[in-house]
Image (cartoon, rainbow over all chains, first blue to last red; front, side, top):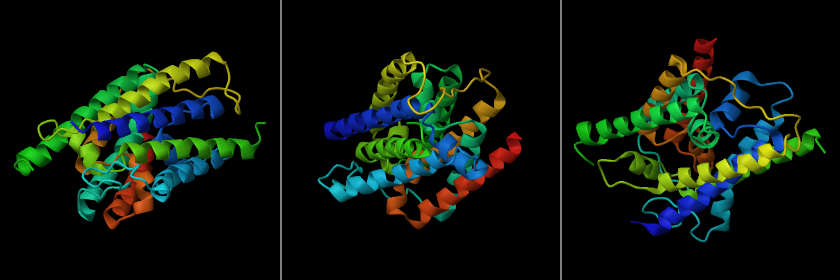
Length: 153
Length: 140
């Protein structure tokens, strides 16, 4: 097993957890990306947008800061030191995937962060069910793409 | 202390911590995410460590935060109140999982990767935003 990659995962996971704790402790909000950013874009909530824009700016600047600092802090598979990995497919596949991610997180009231991190930490039954569901369909999708259609890449 | 500027700064700090976490953990690499989801292939456990550490930290941190009674810069904690496991929740989560499995992108890493923008990523982001609008229409 790649222990360095796993250590990166643990450290990054703690930072994501600290972000969620800070956002709840400071503003009383769930750190759900689809809720924060999706809500910002689709609803433009009056008096409730500035912190969302700032969150978005922070989210984008995080990886940029890691790139600027350098020193191999990124954890891209097979590319030591790289911070942002390449997409796994072309434009048509990403259009389909993006649509499903948008509609799915919109209808399902959350994604990997809102349900997967914050919801599980609150032991919320809806988040446990949603997380189990999207993990199962994601694993099934990768299985079909790689091992049924792709013949085991 | 609860001025708009303070709230905005607090939002930025939260986003920055989240972005740093995604970058350092390698979740800004779709190959790592797909490697985790590929249980029949060369399984990559990284995402399990990320999720485990994030949930553990949040589990402990939330308890400390909730024990204070109110947030620092806001009047109350805004927590979801819904309890039912309805078709919208489960169907939405199922669709999201398929998109996640096709691309290796969930919303956080996709947005955090804008610093390394590629045409496929731009396509995914645009379609995701369109999807959010469609979901809003359906849910109404």
